[in-house]
Image (cartoon, rainbow, N blue to C red; front, side, top):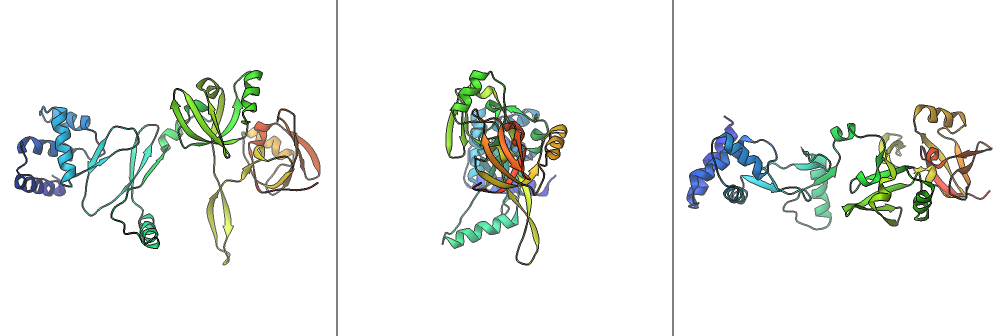
Length: 324
């Protein structure tokens, strides 16, 4: 038997008897069931364990007992967004934070000493005496990412995701409606909110757009791939930093920049490279066609034309307006 659990049971007996807590023996059974579950659990999970132990207790009593366990420091209550309340063991003197997958609901525990120290430094810098804290990081776990298709309909995206608009699975009239709203292929967008009556609210730069479910279903998006670049400090030591160069499809007429990275599937990437679109080359946006597709570009002294969805595979840095 786990020595820590035995210690918990001894303290439970002492504290609950000192406080004359009613129905002590039944509450002790709730504690035993809870200690057998070494993960984040709901009231229903605890009831299932009690049934395995051949103990039948109603949900209200189990809930009340868990509230007492939280009060006396044997458990911690955790609530992630709109998910069902969960409980975890509270190990005195130890602290950890959480990563929560918004797709499958899986909760990962982590501890990072550098983050803990930085929080103390920040509190001290602001003259703030920190008593307690918690960090919750919401995202998509590696398992869910593996099972994800490359392109997904916009209405299936999750709040907080950053995505690239890759294609419109719609007729010409719908495409014109989408374009008239200020959304085009290659745009980098962020999901502000989703799920309210099927509507999706997105941010395109500093502009907010509200899309109905029907329209959102027609827009195919791809998770934004942040590019790691190398930077040198004054001592010529290199380090990786996270930075997102501008997509060529997002550049405006009259802007020029240096190509940082060329992505895309095999055939497309080969074609782009054969056109002279490769890392380190300077590229200039001469103009857009009337319907914003294709783009007219200048690279290495040659005039070339690219569809917007092709330009969305080219990352450009040091972008600035240049007179020609």
